[in-house]
Amino acid sequence: MKKSILVLICFLFSLSSHAKDKFTSEQLIEKAKAFVAAKNARQQPNATIEEIENYISLLSDDFIDEHVKYKFTYTDKSKLRQDMISKLKDEVIHSSIEINEVMVGVNVVFVKMTESGKVKPAHLDKTIEYSKTNIVSLEFNQSGLVKHIRRHHG
Image (cartoon, rainbow, N blue to C red):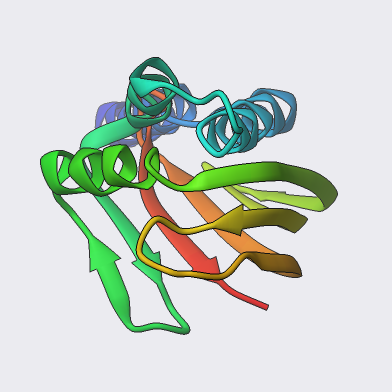
């Protein structure tokens, strides 16, 4: 009998400790919106290093940023920061992101969004205009930071 009660207490304790690691759907949606807003802010014509730092602050130290279509992955904040700062040299005419749909799981959010813009990259002689619908999955750690991004480009 005592053994059964001990097992039950251990089971209930493990459930409560796992529950602390989970965020509510509303919290996850807010975190996803903050991520998209930070992504959008760093892509604006007047973007500065401050917007880049804000975006990077949403990532865990051991983050993975996976661009599935291009088979490319970032895992180093310094390299990501360096590449983003380099993009500040581009002439951005306009850029916007519209969230179309959100799905929530346990500590993960899937965001379907339309990204559009017009930009003249510093290394090209022509302006590029784009409008693509992309799907991004954002996995969050116990602290609420993004630990894994999977970008499925349209």
